[in-house]
Image (cartoon, rainbow, N blue to C red):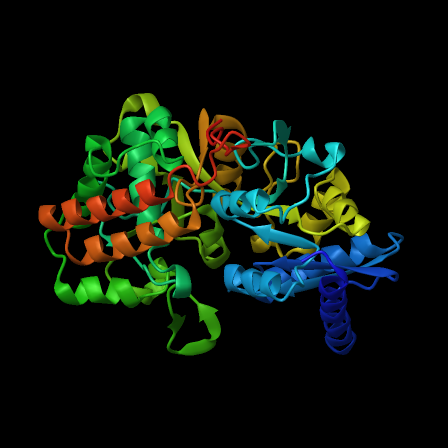
Amino acid sequence: MRGGAGRAARLALAACLLALAALTGGCGSGRGSPVVVLGPWTGDEGKAFTAVLRELSRGSGHAYVYQGTRSLRETLVAQFAAGAPPDVAILNSIGELTEYAVQDKLRPLDPYTAERAYSPWSPTLMLDGRRRTYWVPLKVDLKSLVWSRTGSSSTRPAWCVGMAAQATSGWPGTDWVEDILLHQAGPTTYVQWATGQLNWAESPELKRAFTTWAKLLDARGKRSSQAVERSLTMSFWGTPDPEHPAAGPRGLLGGSLPGCTHEHQASFVRYLYAPRDDVRVEPSARFLHGSAAYKDAFEVSGDMAAVLTDNAGAQELVQRLTSDEGRQKWSDAAEDHLRPFFPDETDPQPDDNPAAQEIATYLTKEAKTLCFDASDVMPPVLRDAFYRAVLTYFRSPDAPTLDKLLGQLETVRTQIAGTYTTSAVRTPTEICR
């Protein structure tokens, strides 16, 4: 992976991307050795990030080349197999990042950059007796939120649910289960579960979280088989307006699922709802039948940058992106409704509408506990099995189905238990702050 062939392949990829950039204006404009960045943002988000890279490349001596894809894991696995990984990868899964660190595919971050490795997004790893920081959050999102149409009743919400997400279909359902468990059982049980220390089949807290979700979705007793299938095939982004098909998705509350009034979704969905003045946001704790002791707990997610090669420009780029200057440039480059949330209250936060301001306040000031998305902490094999399980349970939310699924997930957990926990490796457990 680190030999001459791998470097040549990576440089060839960079050359191809630079050639494409010359034709499309889509990548960094710096000179010197290229630094290839693989990330999840496409469309307008990708354009804003590319603009930031272009700004940061000036005077750096490097050309920053961005490759955006919605198939991030598949692309990265293929690049590893070809011996041509990017210099920097931006991932949202602590489980995947841990896997790569244990496989010696990541480089520890330099001390200056590690100072911005905020918890719970960037827990340290213990490898070979040394605590090291391998990734740092670039942008973050707040979960544990409910969006609703202004004026709709919160006493008996009609939930909008879209479970489809290509290779990761099911994650909107895992978000529900995670959020309910956090608010019912608390952060200690949540951490034990997310980090593989809880028996799926024998946990009454986990079973209660699943059954609570099913009861919430069917509180009105109108969950028809047609509605279930529609939710299973509906993208979490929703569908375009038939009268304006080129305008892009309109969100579940925007008419994709007529008749629903409330949506359990993370802060990123404001990209769809920012132009509207009839959608509000509030903490999900008000809906989840949880404990009052945990009402100020929130799940979070993030897009974290990791360095995969010995290219010195890669460490420098991550340092620049996480600096005050880099975050301000990113905020300035993005359209108002695409301005990212950052992990620290001293960083520029979106304030383009009341929902954005409210989310920023929860994220940086009012939340007493922040816990990283549990499924994104799990090893990818277990996470993917969890995705599939919630799809099955969503279709058949009965006790025998749940018992069977929890038993299967426990089998997966036990099969991979200890994979990353040896005398030389300690995987992260500091996933709540």
